[in-house]
Amino acid sequence: MSIFSYIVALFLLSVIVFVHELGHFLVARWFGITVEIFSIGFGPEMIGFTKGKTRYRLSWIPFGGYCKLKGELQETTPDSLYGKPAWIRILVLFAGAGFNILFALFTMSFLYFVGYKEIVPSRVVDVLPTIKGKSSPAWESGLRPGCEILAINHQPVLTYNDILEHISLHANKPLSLVYRIDHHTNQTTVTPLLSSSSGLGEIGILPVYRVVIGGVLSNSPAFYSGLQPGDIIIAVDGKPTSFYYEFRYAIQDKALMPVSFTFVRKNSTNTLTITLDKVEEKGFLGISLAGSLAFPITNTVKSQNLLFALKKGSTELWKQFLFTIKGFSRMFEGNLGVSQNLYGPIRIVRETALITQWLEFSLLIRFIAIISLGLGVANLLPIPGLDGGHILINTLEWISRRKLPDHIRIALENIGILVLLLLGTWILSNDISHIFYRR
Figure 1 (spheres, helix red, strand yellow):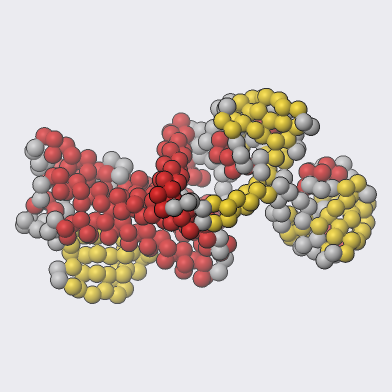
Figure 2 (cartoon, one colour):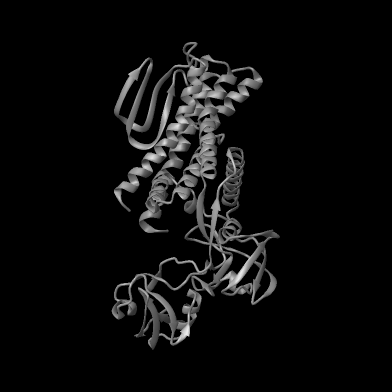
């Protein structure tokens, strides 16, 4: 990835952090609370200026930011946070997450209002016989390449993405599938396995791809034969191969044998005879696919007016919120890998940089909305040190009409910060391990 992609990613994530801190800032100022520092980033100040009683600064560490309010832990003066009633403190503390949620709603609704086109895989799937040397759940359940999955757990599915949404969060849980193959409709049960690499459920299916070469491996039969990216393989030993699974079957029993490949290059049809290698006892050519879908679905998504866009945006965010909650519950149950799916700042920046590199407007806007929603929800967790922990304490004080002693509140804050530091260290090390060792 280019440095420019990372710069854009950091900028976009800084916008999300800015929105969060702006929420605290505006509501605090509304109620007459002094904001001492408004910072984007942590660590030493890079540039800044002072206006009124507030120091505005951009700091060197570009992960996060903070809005330092006067008297955050104990009352000092009437313009301090703890110099205000509990209900005002709750509003100020909630404002950061609230602004993130509103920003997510705005960006998602904006996306549906301006409209976009998306190309997604259909519900016709390829089925792998094995996963990591074991028989795949999909194959064992009777699914075969070219079958069309119609419903999962009695819920209709329209695209491959709908299928993955069901499978990914149901590791080790049986799913009822209705599918169609050769004009016959059947029903089966499949239990997704927990993938050690992704931490998600998988059954051994892929979208159906055409055999368009995306890359050629060095020192492979494809490399020495002169096959090139962009070539479209249309037949193996004279037998048509419209789909990748047909190509896969055609070569799997021909290791170390000469095989005739017919391919199209720039509107010209050619034929080569290539002797295959053997990998895992199967014939191996040495190509990767370009990702050309065999049955792409092109959707034009655009709401009729702003009200419909707002409704669609809120519905999509609610769906994503429930998906996130289900993900956390699966982690606690042990059915979803924690280390693979709990992202820290490094992996968030990396994933954002990947998406910016694709230059896909709708995907980028959707991703930013989801990150903003996630930041807002995470900050509301009732953990001391987070906004949610402060809100819980202040809510108890509001209900009881009695303040916690300062030394207890400060002790809870310090414990919360220690827990967050330990958790942050683990997540950061997990990010580094995931990126460098591809666990």
